[in-house]
Length: 195
Image (tube, rainbow, N blue to C red; front, side):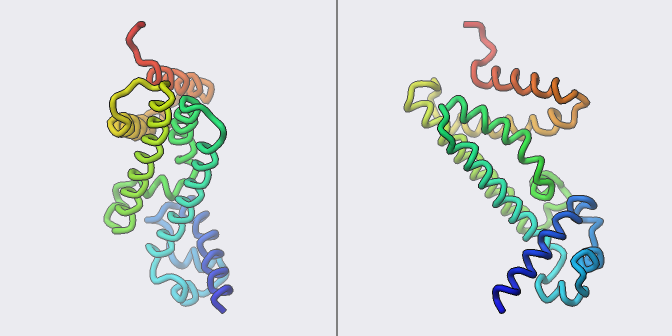
């Protein structure tokens, strides 16, 4: 019976994810979720207390997928420079592909939900940890010349947050974005001062 309940919950999350992606949290209704899952609204409430509860499950599922993809990206056999480049590309591109998680990170109207604040804090913590690990590895191998991996991680994570919206909402063509990302990585890794 527990297995069946988990399967039904997973199906509700899968279907709801598509609806939230299309309409957003605010415009999605429990009636739409019930209709799309071919269940009565009371059946949905048996598995989830509220629309917020379903959204939380959707966002947590996307966060798991994102973390697994990032782990695959960073645990490949790469140099610290390649890992940092992969992280930057991942952060500026892949995070946007999990739309409900991305909305949870960025949409102000969702911040009244306690779990959203926790998800944001956890994402920030994980992001700093990943970048710090890359920088420490580069420092050990004498590839990166910085005094503190902690300060470097904070600077890079802050830069990524500041760049994601203007970079990907710009009217630049995809090829221009590729060049823009290359320039960004060059500035980040090699600086702007002529050597």
